[in-house]
Amino acid sequence: MQPFTGNFTQQEPIPEEAIAAAVAVMRGGRLHRYNTGEGEIAPAARLEEAFAAYQGARYCLACASGGYALSVSLRAAGVTPGDRVLTNGFTLAPVPGAIAAVGAEPVLVEITRDLVIDLDHLERRIDETGARVLMLSHMRGHLADMDALTALTAARGVTLIEDCAHTMGARWDGRPSGGFGLAGCFSTQTYKHVNSGEGGLLTSDDPEFMARAIMLSGSYMLYERHRAAPPPETFATIRLETPNMSGRMDNLRAAILLPQLNALDANAARWNARHDAIAERLAGVDGLYLPHRPAKEAYVASSIQFLAPGLSPEACTDFVARMKAVGVELKWFGAAEPSAFTSNHHSWRYVPAQDLPNTDAILGTLFDMRLPLTFSVEDCRHIADLIAAGMTRP
Ligand SMILES: *Cc1c(COP(=O)(O)O)cnc(C)c1O
Image (tube, rainbow, N blue to C red; front, side, top):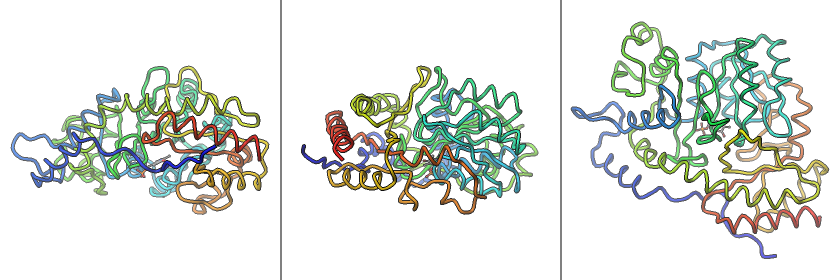
C-alpha cells in the first residue's frame, strides 16, 4: 500500500469573503471593538449577535481565546480562590489551566471508554468534595448523556459550565452544546471549527453572569455598544464592582469569523463524512474499540479516536512509529511525557495528584487523529486502510 502524504495540521484557506471583510476592517483602521464611527456596528458586536442566534443563546461575548472564555466564566460565576471545580480527568491543558487561573482547585472525574465523563464517579466526587461547579469538557467532540448529566447537576445544585472547544456546531437531542448550563465556552483558534488564529466565544442566558463577564473582558464603560448583551440596568452596580481583566476580541478576527459561521453546518457534514468513512473501516478491525455515539448525539467529528485495549505501552509506541513511517500522524494519550497538544492529568503538576485508574487504563491505549478538511473522503479511506493494516500485521 502507498504511504499517505497529506499534512495533518493543514487547514483550509480563510474564505475569500472573510479575507475581503478583514481587508475592509484594516482599510478603516478601526480594529478595536469600541472604535466605531457614528451609527456603526463593530464586527465584534455583529459576531456576538450572530453566534448568539446560532446557539439560540440570549447573550454572547467575543474574547481573546477559548481559555480566556473558560477562566472568565469561572470568575463571572463567582468562583473564588480555594474553591473546588469539577472537571473531566481527560481534557486538554487549557481546562485545568483556566481553573488554576482563578486560584481554584481542579477535582478530576473519571471518564468512560466512550471518552465522556463518568456520571457515577461525578456523583461521588460531588458528594465527597462539596464542589459546586462543574466545568464539563466535551473532549474530542464526545457528548455525555446530557439528559442524565443535567438531571444530576440540577439535583445537587451544581453549576454547569461547558467547554465546547471541540463541539462548536454539535447538538444533543437537538439542543446545541453550550446551551445546557450557565455558560458555553468556545474557541476560534486555528485547530477548532472556525479559524481566526486565536479567539474565543462565551454564551449564556444569565444577565448578571454576562454583565460580569463583559466587564471582566475589559469593556470600560462601553458595554452599551454590545448587542448580544443584557440591558444597561443590569450593569448598574456590576460595572463598579467588577475588575477589568482585558481579553477582548478585535474587529479583525471578528470580521474573519462572521462568514465562517455561515459555513459551520456545511463543514460539520464534510467533517463527518471523513470521520464516518474511517470509523466504518476501523469498526471491522479486530482489537480496536471505537467510542459509542448515542442516537441523540449530533457530532462534529473534526478528529477521530479509537482504543486498542490489548496493546502494551511498548506495542503502542511501536504502532505510532509504524504509522508515522507510512505518513499517518496518530497521537497516543498513554505516553509518559506530554508531547505537543497531547497531555494527560499526570503532567499537570500544579493540580493535586488524583487517582483515576479507569481513565489511566483508557488513555493507556487511546489513539487520536486530526481530520482536517483539506483531506478528501478518499484520503480518509486510504488512511483507514493503513491503520487497519498496521493493526492486523504488527
Ligand atoms: C483548544 C481548547 C481550549 C481552549 O483553547 P484556546 O487555545 O485557549 O483557544 C479549551 N479546551 C479544549 C479541550 C481545547 O482543545
